[in-house]
Structure formats: structure tokens, C-alpha cells
Image 1 (cartoon, helix red, strand yellow):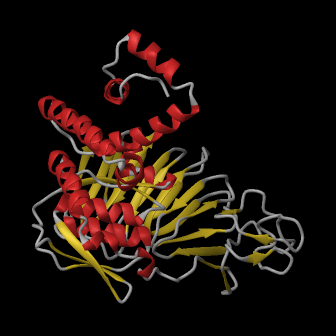
Image 2: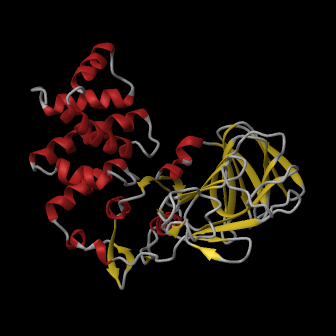
Image 3: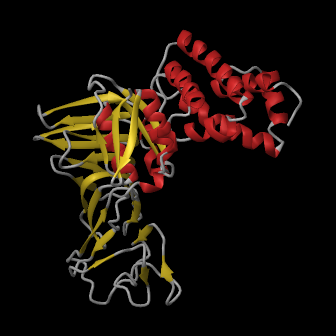
Length: 397
């Protein structure tokens, strides 16, 4: 690594990530990043930077936060814990109150509270498997099937006798049965338990990313006049273009497209349902009316008051879950814990007194629940313990 002081390097990297670096700084960064050790350092630094900037803030607040951030890194490095702990904790976590979170994190390092020593291995994870219900009523687990004997053997060509472990079920190159009839659709259905994700490629090439706790019913092969699927839960659709409309039916709405990318969240038990459009156009049918939404817009329907609304959003940020990053914004503490429970497949019980009026922001990766929960606890000023495999959230005392 270059001999410049760590603080000047941190300032350089912050300028690059914030878009405030000048041409000379860009050239300096381009030379510095060529070193593989520097590249690894930058990847770690970038994770904590993006976590820091998860919540919206004014320019003055950002400047103060940046100064605190750099001071925090410098003091943490003196304790030789920057790479080992600070970046590890922040790799998946939500920064909800920037300044308070950083100061409290440093305080926890100094105090070494017992709750940091909990063995997250004692958490009890959901053990349900992904299930595919075939048109004949039989049920299989697509993660562990032998293509030589499985009823899925006509869907996923593979070497004979080899186990199939892909998290994708592909109907595009399906070997059609002689008994298939063009006017009779056969339906399969896939159920995704909490803590899992899965991809289904439909017969027209449409790719469906299924979120934890979701259910999708779909034809094995689409007919010539319709492309209809049924959803309970959340899914991201990358729809192949066609003159035949693609329709997603949920509990209370129909979403119609010809070819585009969009996200639908419509769990039967939820208070709200929504559609987020990434590109193209989408027509939402609900309560006898139709609404067209544009890219970077979200249509939300409140089932309690039976009203819909359209807001402008960062569609790509809000649909990162399909790539393993769950982004949450303006969400209550209870709702956030429910999302995390579903995302990681664990039971989370909230016994804290965090106000329902507080709103939280955050990004969580798919792999590290320990990092996520630790930082949530720091920022919400709560503690946690593990009882009988469940994560219990309590007030900080």
C-alpha cells in the first residue's frame, strides 16, 4: 500500500465515492487501486460508505457525518479493529441514525457488552424446503432431484443420474411430451419458504425472481392467447416481449404488461400491495379501474382504506433483493423486523418499546444475519438475546 497517511487515503476514497473528487484525485485513485491490497481495502471501505449513506440527509449533515466517519475509522484503526470488526459489522447493516450509530458502535467496542458474544449458531432457522407442485399433484424439491428419475426430468436437461442443485427452474428449453396439447394448459406451482430465494424461467423466456415466503402458479407452457400467472408474496419479473399480454394476478389486482421489468409485492396477509416499475410500462387493474405507471414509479394499494397512490422511487435500489441485497426505506421497526425474519428465515420477537412512529432505512445482505442484527441493535438502541432458537429484541438498559 502507498506510504500516504491512512487519513489522506480515506479522504481520497470518500471524495471518489461522493462524486466530489477532482481530476487529479481521480488520477491518483486510478494509480492507487492497481495494487491488489488497495483494491481489497477499497471494497471494504466502500461497504461502510454505502451503509453510512443509506439514510437521506442534508448537505451540512453529510459533511458532519463524513468528518465523524473519518475520525471514527482513524480511532478504530488505532485499536487494530477497523478491518476485523468495524467493516465486518457494517457489511450488511442499516445505518439509521448516522452520527449516533457511529458513536455507539465505538462505545460498544470499548465496553465489550456480553450481547456481542452471543453464538448466532444457536439461532433456529426455518427448515422448510422449496417445493414444486406438479400438474399431476405430486410435489418435489427442485434443489435436490435426480434428473434420471425425477418428474422434472423433462424440464431441466442434465447429465444422466447427476444431482441437480441449481436455484433456477428453466422451462424455456423444455422437452415437450407427446401428450402435450396446445389447447390444454398444465399448471405447476412453486412455494418459497422464509429464508430462501428461487428463480423460475417460464416457457416464453420470462425470468421470475421469487422472494422468501412467496408462491407462484404458472403454466408449464403458455398458450397462444394468454400468459397468465398467479402470485402470493413478492416477485421480480423480467418479461419477454410478445404481442400476447403477460398478466400477474394477485389477491386484489391484475398487473398487465407486454414486455418489461417490474416488481410486485402482494402478500395476502399484508396491509399493502405494490408494483414497482423498472422500465417500459405497466397497467394495474384494481377495483374496476386501471392505472398506468412509469419507470421509477411505485403504485401502492392500502387494503385497509381501499385506496391507491403513486410515488416516485429509486426502482433499482428497491429491487436489489433479487441480487441478494434487501433495501428498506421509511419502514417502522416492527415491519423491519418482520422483513428480516422472512429474509433470513428466523423467528424474531420484538419486546422493545421502539416507537411505531420512527422510520428506518437500511441495506442487508443475504448471508450475514449477525452483522445485520448487531447494527440494527446499535442504531435502534436496543439489545437482543437468543432463547430457544428465537431472536428476542429488548430495550437497552
